[in-house]
Image (cartoon, rainbow over all chains, first blue to last red; front, side):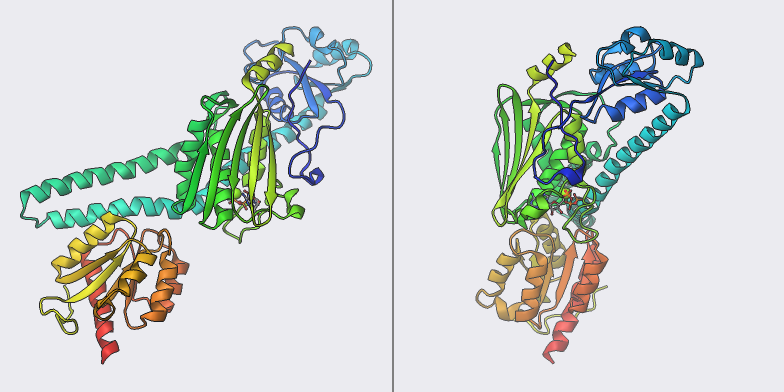
Length: 370
Length: 144
Ligand SMILES: Nc1ncnc2c1ncn2[C@@H]1O[C@H](COP(=O)(O)OP(=O)(O)OP(=O)(O)O)[C@@H](O)[C@H]1O
Ligand SMILES: [Mg+2]
C-alpha cells in the first residue's frame, strides 16, 4: 500500500526549509463512534502524518462523521468487529460512551492494541475539539489580519471611483451641454461597476471556508484570481509578473483555502521585493506529482531563519504589519491537501516556494488501495 | 465660498493660480481639473511623483506653480517620496494631500511637515476649493 503522506513535524524539528521524511511507521488508530466526538477526532487526527486512521464505525449509518470519513477517504466499517480486528492496530478510541461497547471491546480487541474509552476518550475529544476551534480561529484571524494590510488597497480602489462619481455628479448639477451630461452619466455607471467588482473579488476571499468539500481546482485560474486579490494587499504596479503555466494543471482541495495560500505567497513575495522585481508563477504537471512555484527576486531569507518561517507568529515584519501566521496556515492547508511545501532562498537574490502535490492519478490509487 | 484673491500672484489676469495635480488615476486628475478649472485655476497634471518632478522642473512651471495636490499611493516615485522632494526643493509651494486611504499617523506626520491639508477621497468640490484657496493664501504670505 502506498500512502502519500505529508510530513507534519513539529516546527522546532524543522531545521531545513523543506521538511524531513517521517521517521517511524504511523500509529494505527480506529475510531468507534462518528457523532460530534468521532468527527472532531477524525478531523484533527487525519492531519497528522504519524497517525493513520484505519477506519471508523457507528451504529447510526447517517452519523455525520461517516460522511466526513468518506470525504477524507477514511474507510467506513459497518461492524465494530471488522474494524477492531484490523491488522496491526495500535489504538482503539471509543467515543460512544456506551457501557455495552466497553465490554465488547474488552473481549474483542486483539492483544497489542490499547483502548481509550469513557472519560479518557471524552477528554481526548474535548482537547481535539479545542485544537480544531483554535485552528479555524487562527485561519480566520490570519485572514482578518491580512485584511488589515488590505485596507489601504481596498480604500484606494473604492475611493478613486467614488471621487470620480462625486466629481462628475457635482458637475452634472450645472452642466449645460446635454452631450457632456450623457457622457458623464456613462462614466458614473462605469465607476459604479468598478466598485462592485472589488466587492465581488473580496467576498470569496474573506468568507470563512466552511465547507471542507474537496474538488479539482484549476491552478492557473486560481493563481490569476489570487493576483487580483493580492493587489489590494501589496502594490503590484512596479512588479514584473511572469506566468509560466502549463495548461490544465489541477490539484485537489478546497478552492477557498488554496486561494488563500496563493494570496499569501504572492503577498510575501511582493513584500520581500519592496516594489521592484520579478514575480514568477509556475505550474508544472509531472507523472507522479504536480508542482506550483512562486518565486521572487527579493530580499531572500537568512539560512538560520529558514527553519523558523513556518512557525506560527514568526515574522520579521514590524508590529502591526505581519501576523506571522501566513506561512503557518499555508503549511496546514497544504498538508491537508496531502502536499508539501519547500523553500529555496538566497540572501539578496530572492526566494522560491515550491508546493508539491500528488498528481491526481496518484491520489486515486491511494483511495482505492486503503 | 471661495475666499482667494484672484490673480494676485501669477501671470495671467484670468487665472487664480496654477495647480499641479499628481495622481496615477486619470479619472481623478480629470475631475479635479474639472472642479478647479471652473473655479478659475489653471491645472497641470502628472501621473506619478517622477513625472511631477519632471513637470515642476520644466520651463517656466517652476515659477508659475502655486499649489501641488498629491496622491500617496502611486507607482514609481510614490507620494511620500514626491512630497519629501517638493518640501526640500520647493519649500514655498504649498502641498495638499488627496489620498484614497485615511491614515491618521501619516496624516499627522505630513501635516507636521507643513502639508496644508490631508484630504481623503471622495472629497466634495467645495472642500477641495476651500483647501486650495487656503493653500493660495499661504503661498501669498510666503511671498510677502
Ligand atoms: N518570499 C519571501 N521572501 C523573503 N522572506 C519571506 C518570504 N516569505 C516569507 N518570508 C519571511 O517569513 C516570515 C513569515 O512569513 P509569514 O507569511 O508567515 O508571516 P508574515 O508575512 O510576516 O506576516 P503576515 O503573513 O501576517 O503578513 C516573514 O516575516 C519573512 O521574514
Ligand atoms: Mg505573509
